[in-house]
Length: 76
Length: 160
Image (cartoon, rainbow over all chains, first blue to last red; front, top):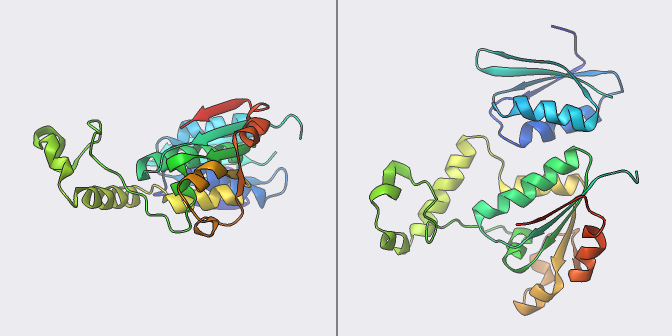
């Protein structure tokens, strides 16, 4: 897994909280820095794709492991 | 930011279940970079009260899932029993909490933080003799023309 600058644990949170928290975390990053997100909401897989497409922050990685979802988003 | 997308919502309902769509969509749209405005009218004004006392009722709502298969065998008249609404509201709140669904107050705070513009319908405030002191700070009061000023430029307009 690539390195990241900040981690956000959104485990146990449901729509739309993972997206909203991610947005907040990204606001504290510089352009090019990477946010690692951990989530348990299965809907977050599609939602982070959509979030990335609409905000221009690149979704570098999206994977599932042991019932959890992990995302790497690079701030635009 | 003239190319910023705009979402306009009219919130007309004042129950716990119907409080969610406006606040979920508004906060999410704001996170996606939309400029958002919600116009609260009639029962929707309940969503702007400082002290949120929103309830959910199984009455007249055959689509509402109830615990222990109650919706299958419970007579419709049973949903009118005094206290039923309080019980269902408590159950719904507990369920939401256990599933990590945000509270309405939390989502409203997030909307506020994201600078979602909230407008209370002045006519409804007058109609129901409500006092502006009952409502949260930072909201505006206006009428239909105020809504159209924004909605006329909006990319998406929703009536909830």
